[in-house]
Length: 522
Image 1 (tube, rainbow, N blue to C red):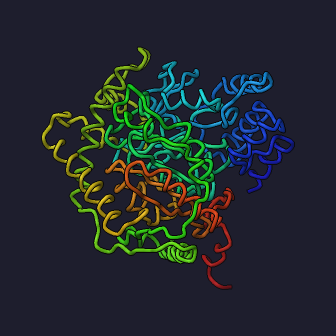
Image 2 (cartoon, rainbow, N blue to C red; image 1 turned 45 degrees about the vertical axis):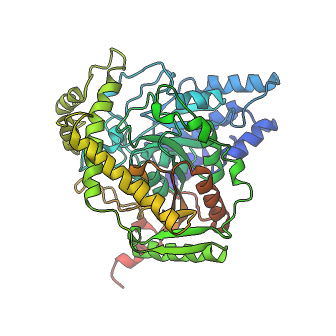
């Protein structure tokens, strides 16, 4: 903690970005109380003091050398009286599998992509830039979005090292948007962008005390994002409040001609901030997914108290005890992800600059075998299985994709919502952060993410409270294109509980108030 206080003391006198919302920063900019350059400098200083030094979170993999230039350009436009978008001048961090036109590589955390400087914006980055947001840099991630190995360590990448959880530095941040989770929790940017295939926005958001939204697949473009699966991949907002997540999603959402899945997006997107107006729980029917509870004793008690608060606020609670995804659906998802990983990653790598020598998944596998750093902590069995798949015309793949999407979507979420006339499904998001374990790998537990991930439907998590100083979240899941509804429900619960607490940068949970209980009496 001494290192933390020393690092923070060095920032005295700067614009106060700690726990400052994007909405507050935007208001200060619009009122002339600060400048984008001052805000950007404050975040850059904070990254140097907390991420690179101090607690050394390792959450930011690269700072954008053009960030201050972008901030000054926004300030000049504002001074000239130009009409600016609401988030103009507000800094944002992007996960390092999302391309930007800035002179930084898009690595997905892998040394195989250390020269992947494409000079092009992913459409989601272009939308942020067009809205005047300052692209502050890229965040660390579980390498290759946590798809390389079945024995991985979430939050670790060959390029960026291991991300630490700002609530307890020896605990994991979950993955794969680990760096975005830790960085936004630690106020290293106003808001951040993560990506999810199954749990990669919602898990790091829950474990780092954030609001995270995995949108409907097709609401946000995936073009020029290092892929896993065109059936399940999506980018989404990560923030310290529901309102900030809604602000960011409003900018991010929209159709992209290069991504066919987004064809409906322009017709489905809305002003997600306006949708929060009058948010209420009164009369809302929420279905508790009992199969997804029972993650941890103290968290279960917290979830029960939260459900009681929902009832007190006027929500009607329906306990769903007769639904549980069939075990074979996990195998079906696995076949879909391995098959699409090979096809989609090969297609992506073919578009990278000539400096990138790994042009196929097979090339990446071969590269990793020669790298002691890449293979030092865990292997690449998932990559190897994916490389043996038979392509997108494989009947086994087509059957698995159709089966799993129908079971989780029309026969799952849609059927449950319709049967009980529900507004959303709810459950605990994940268990508390586990201690990072380089011997045993990850110990994450959470059962709700696959339901939304496989169906391609939206999943919102927001802070529910703390378990021994570690954040845990509550999830809201709904049918396709129900983001506005989920965000309004989340905003109403957030206002009711005000459950989020800033990180403490504790060295360990075991060094906290309960440490005395770990030694004998006397």
